[in-house]
Image (cartoon, rainbow, N blue to C red; front, side, top):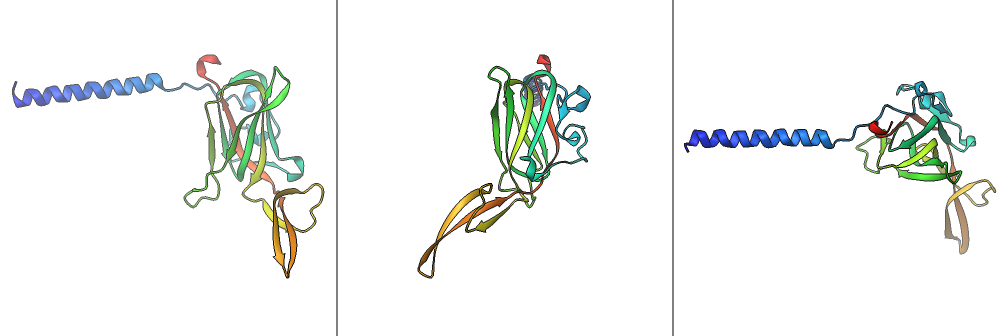
Length: 199
């Protein structure tokens, strides 16, 4: 076998391996449904901006309103993936309504990454590997990047105390309570998907 025939054979083998790799990757990739959360699919939202399909609109929840975003589907779905387009969320829980036990259950808890390469917030959260049936989802915001933590010596009964600090001040032990002062929570969109073949 000549050198040119060997090179030709090697190129043919490499081409076949590359082609097989591309085909196997496309066969193994997950095929998702259309976005189930869209208002056009008759899904109701706590704020119309949550599911209008436009990333330019922003849904806002007042801190006095428990900071919850909700979705109610027109039917029951097998939820497999949720995408949150963020504005100022730092920590939140994704819950679903358990139809069997008639109660809210936590599907996932999220804490923003620390290293954001100079960005203020993580712009998008992709929560996959989910597998539950439900007709309702809610996103309960625990912290936003705009929340403030203030010190109080005597917290009010409704204050959310996040830390307790004891310091020696002029020979006297003084206790300070670090209290969360919540701000408005905002996001751009919530997307919900199931597997395409299960839709």
